[in-house]
Length: 79
Image 1: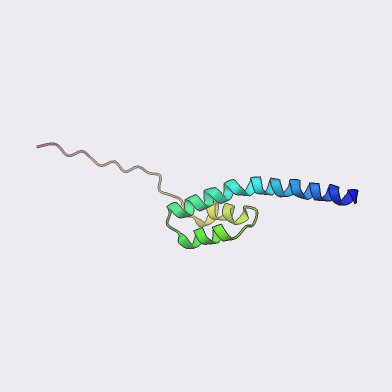
Image 2 (image 1 turned 135 degrees about the horizontal axis):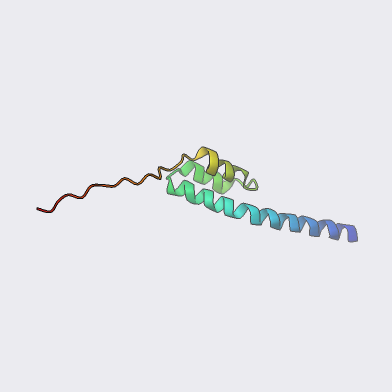
């Protein structure tokens, strides 16, 4: 009976570590897909729970890089 208790506590620690690992990845991937208006990705990421693997793939491979160049508009002279 004591061995079952030890195994259970190890699994609980593993599940907590997995939860702590996956929540930030899921949050960032959901935020990024929502901001980009990708409804299908948002639903898939929300429903599937795979320890952050799909979220990491989405963030680094499937979402296109955002254009970080700042376009400066010339000021028009006031007449």
